[in-house]
Amino acid sequence: MTVVVAVLGLGEAGSLLARDLAAAGAVVRGYDPAVRASGDVTDTGSEADAAAGADLVLSVNSAKAAVGALRAGIRGMRPDAMWADLNTASPGVKAELAEIGRAHGIPVTDIAMMAPVPGKGLRVPMLASGGAAERVANTLRAFGSSVEVLDGPAGLAATKKLLRSVFYKGMATSIVEALEAARAAGHEDWLREHIAAELARADGTIVERIVTGTRQHAVRRGAEMGAAAQMLTELGVPPLMADASRAVHERVVTEKP
Image (cartoon, rainbow, N blue to C red; front, side, top):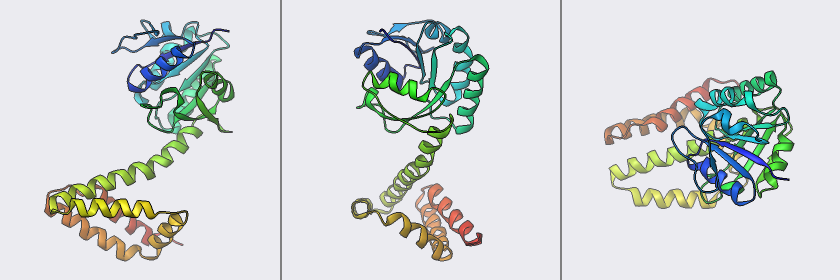
């Protein structure tokens, strides 16, 4: 049976997903107000036009456009069709999307893409939760996608992705800030090698060691990060992450065990 998939948003991620779906045999209808569909993807004139007749709609535009895209596209959908939101939006936005879907009789599935799409395309690891998550997952799996279904409402997949983002993006921006300061101080090569060695030595005990050590030494480490923030300022580097670290350590001091 031919499956019709609408892809809303043809930027970096959406265009790659649309391309791979079409290559795998789906009939793909695309819409993006700024980009025309190309190749085997049929270009359409609006969200509603793309969604009309689709078995599955993938919204891959942006978090700020997610609600508007759903409101614009949902009215012309078939009663048995599915909507999946792949945008990196908050759990609250995902819950709002699910509520809009329920009002129109269309299940909305929350999908979190757990790695960059370039280089992986449709095979990017995904988490799915909410209405019709299993059906959406099975539809995408038929075209080669990797989707893990979570037992929970729309917003659960987003919650897990964003919790990881707090750690991963926080670590990444701390490294970027530290290297920028090291460059200004003339020690970038030394710090780069030191960071790489520390990451290579990490094992399964590191999380507990970090959490325990932070609570035990919060006063001293908070003062240390205050000094680090002052140093960065003297080097002409805005101490955004260093000062945030100082603030977190100070908050930990005031918390009850």
